[in-house]
Length: 268
Image (cartoon, rainbow, N blue to C red; front, side):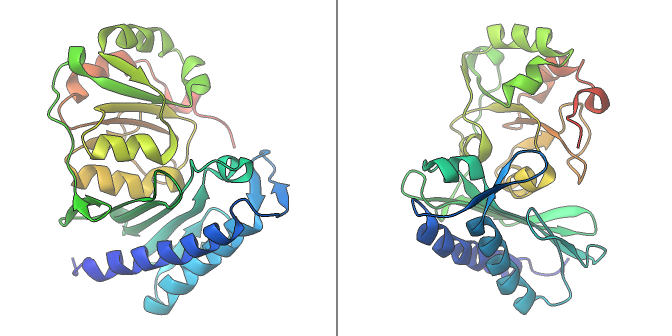
């Protein structure tokens, strides 16, 4: 595979272009529309995605795109960028900084580059990675924790309502009783925490590939592992996540064995 650093550098540049737009609109006066699924979308979402695509398409004109707001373009190309310009628009609209820009690059089905930028959270958090190059948070190398027992594990749950509707919920309840600490950080943040060794595992449902493609690369490069709750590989149809620091998968897996991806995933 070609050198991935130029791809990563351009993804960072694209995230910074989106950040400038986010800062201009945040706490401002803008129209909020709603999609068919009732999720909000703003002019900031659309302008951010256009800015990201402009940076990347100028540098890589043969690459394709799959975006949250602008859809697909050249989606059968070898290289396809996966973009969620503002993941957490509900937070953005309500004026609290729990949102991020997610940019990932997929090469012939494999996720190889990821940038997760939360510009207004905690003074700004940008996590970056490319296959074989390691992962960083705000420019500093990161890696997952060395916790290897449930009794010491900090576990974060995401989108608990859909988890609770699953046949696996009873056994997840048993897991909750077995670990050291339960949190529900959600969105980009619990992946940043997991990749940098501050928590140890994540269970999450009711998401899509644009939410976690970049975070998948970052976590893997930091030493973690990530699949769907049912154990299948992360891919375009993905709707759930089972992620660990790379040491806890075998200990946690029995507690999510009853998860049925086909039955429990939300319908489009």
